[in-house]
Length: 358
Ligand SMILES: Nc1ncnc2c1ncn2[C@@H]1O[C@H](COP(=O)(O)OP(=O)(O)OP(=O)(O)O)[C@@H](O)[C@H]1O
Image (cartoon, rainbow, N blue to C red; front, side, top):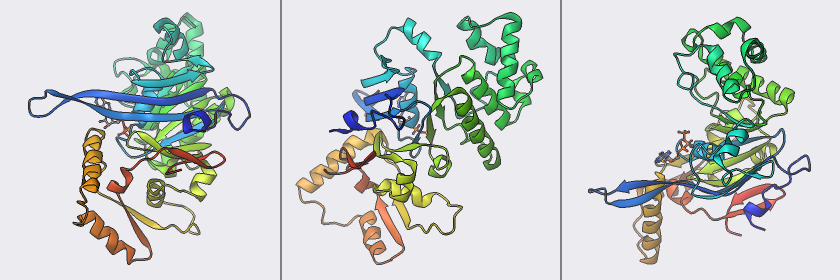
C-alpha cells in the first residue's frame, strides 16, 4: 500500500475523513538564467498526501519556505494545483465548477498569519465580519448585526467593537476578529495558517485555547500550519512534518514526539524548547541553509553526477563537521545535503509514516 492510498483514509473515529488530499503538487513556473529565457519550476508542493478527519486537528509543520502555506491555499483553490486530488466530504474540490466552489468556500475557510495585513484598515469590524454573510446572502439588516455581535462574543470580544476599525485593536484582538470572520459562514473546516506566529507568547496560548473551544462548540476540523513543533504539541491530533515540498514524517502527536524517526523531525524536535526538564533530548544541529525549491533540482542532479563520477572523495565543510560531531556524544549534525534524498513514505507502524527506503 502506498502513502496516498493508505495514509489514514479512515480516521480515528472510524468514519471517512472530511478532507482527503492525494498526490498534491503545486509548481510555480519561473523564468531563470541571465536572459531569463529558461523556464523552470519552483516545486513548492511536491506529491503531498494526507487526510483530516471530522473534528480533527492536523498539524503541518516545517521551516519557512517548505510549502506549508501553498498546501493550505491549494486545498482552498486560492492557487491552482499542478496535479493531484482534494476531496471534501467526498466532493472533488479541484475539479468542481467555480459556482460550486463559491458554495464550498462557505464550509472551507482560512485564518491568516498576519492579523494586521489580513484585515482591511478602511473597513469597520462590522463590515469585515459581515461582508461574507452579505455576499452569500446569509443575513442582512438587524439580523446581520445580531450575528456579528454573537460571533464577536464567541471570540472573546465585545459586541460594540463592531463599530471600530482594526488599528484600534492589539494583535491578539485582531486575530480574534479574523477568527470571527472565518466563522461567519458556519464552516466545517478551517486552514489556520500560522495563526499565532506573529503574536506574543502569552497571547499565543489564549488564541490556541479559543480555537480549541470553538472546535468543540462548532465541531470544526483544522489544518494547523506552524513552523514550530512546540506550538503544535498540545494542539494537534496528528502532525505531518514537511521539508522542501514533501511530507517526510506523519504520525499521531504522541507517537511523533515519543518516537521521531526521520532525521529532520528529530532536528526540529531537538530545537523546540521543552517545559519538562525530565524530557532529555539529544541535541541535533541542522547544518547549512534551507535550499530553495528551485535549486533543488540542480542540487539533486549534481549530487547524482558526483556520486556517478566518484567525485565524493573531497570532504566538504559539512562532511568535516559531521565527522567531528561523531566524536562528540551529545550532539549530532544533520547536513541539508543528506536531507535531499527523499524516498517515498513508508508506514513503519499503524499510522506512522516516514520517508525512508522500504
Ligand atoms: N507565487 C509564487 N511564485 C513563485 N514561487 C512561490 C510563489 N509562492 C510561493 N513560492 C515559493 O514556494 C515555496 C513554498 O512557499 P510557502 O509560502 O508555501 O512556504 P511556507 O512553508 O508556508 O513558508 P512560510 O512559513 O515562510 O510562509 C517557497 O520557496 C516560495 O518562495
